[in-house]
Image (tube, rainbow over the protein chains, first blue to last red):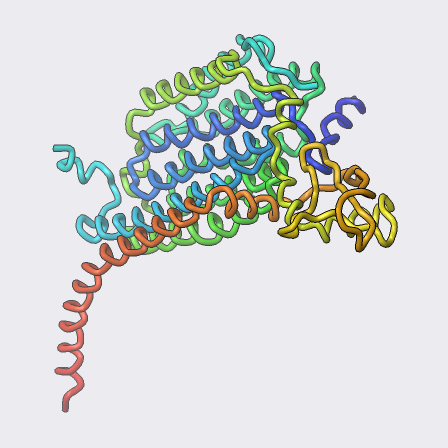
Length: 119
Length: 329
C-alpha cells in the first residue's frame, strides 16, 4: 500500500517524459467530458444550457491538447489552447447576444420555439 | 521506460472498458431530467461508479508498468466529470452555470498537473472570471418572471429532456469508438527518446544567456570570470537538446579556451517564458488571427445589440412622455 501511494505522489519537478498510459488517462477524461457535452447539447431544450454544453466540449478539447503538449514536451499544444479560449470567448459573446434577442422576441428560452427555422 | 502501445489489451481490459461505458450510458440516461418518476440520484451514482470502474481498469495496467498518474489526477477528474454531469442534468440554468465553474476549476487543476501553469491561470481568469459571468448575467436577463403564487416554478422545457435514450445511446457509442481507437494502437506513440528529441521548451534559453550564467554560477558549475559564449547577435551558445552550455573565460575572443558545461540538475525555462516564446516566435500570424476573431465578435455583438437599443429608446420616449405629463403643473 505504501508503494502504491508513493508511486501516486511521485510526479513533480522538472518535466520528464510522461508514460503513454498516463497520457491515456487524460485522454479518457477528455473523451468522457466531450461526450457529456454532446449529450447535453442534444437533450437539453434551454438555449443557454445548450451553449454551456458547447463550452464544455471546448474544455474537453483543451484538456486533450494540454495532455498532448505535456507528452511531447513542447509548447505547441499549450499555445493552441489560447486559440480555443479565444474562440470560446468570441462564441460566448455572439451566442449570448443572440440568446437575449431571441428571448425578447418570444419570451422563452425553449429551442423548440424556433423550430420553424428548420426550413 | 514508456513505449508505444499496440493493442487495447495493453491499456485496459476491454471487458472493463465496455462494461464501464454501458454502465455510464445507463447512469446518464437515468440522471437526465424528465417528468414524473425521476431517479436522478441513482443515475448520478451509477454514472460515477462507471467512471471509477474505467479509471481503476486503466490504473491496473498503468501501475504494472509504473506509469500511474498523480493521485490529484483522480481527485480533479472526478470533480470535473461530476460537475459536467451536473451541468447537463440540473434543472435550473443558474446551478448548471455554477457547476460549470466547478468543472473549469477542476480542469485548471488538471492543467497544473500537466505543468501548464500559465494556461491554468488563464483558464480561471478567462473562463470562470469572464465567460461564465457573462452567462450568469444573461441567465438573469433572460428568465421568465415568476408569478406571485409559484415562485419556485420551473419552465416546462427545463424539466423535460429531449430524446434522452437516443442521445445517451449515440453519445456513449461515440465514446466507445473514441476510446477503442485511442487505445488500439491505430497511432503508435513515440518512445521517450523520440519525445525528448522533439522537446522545444528550453529553446528560449538561447536568448537569455545571462540567466543561464547566473544559474550555472549559483550551482557552482562555473567560476567567477567565466561567461557563456555568445555569437555575434548576442545569443548564447546553448544546446537545449543536449542540455549543455559552452562557456569561455570573460573577455576572450573566439572559442579556443571554451569548455562544455551541463545544465544544473532540474534547470529549465519557466512555463510562461517558453509558452510566450512558442507563441510569438513560432506562431506570430496566429496572434493576429486571434485578434481579428475577437474584433469580429465584438462588432457582431454590437450590431446584434443595436436593435435592442433602438427598441429601448422608443420605450423610453413613451415613458418620458408619461413622466412629463404628470410632472407639468
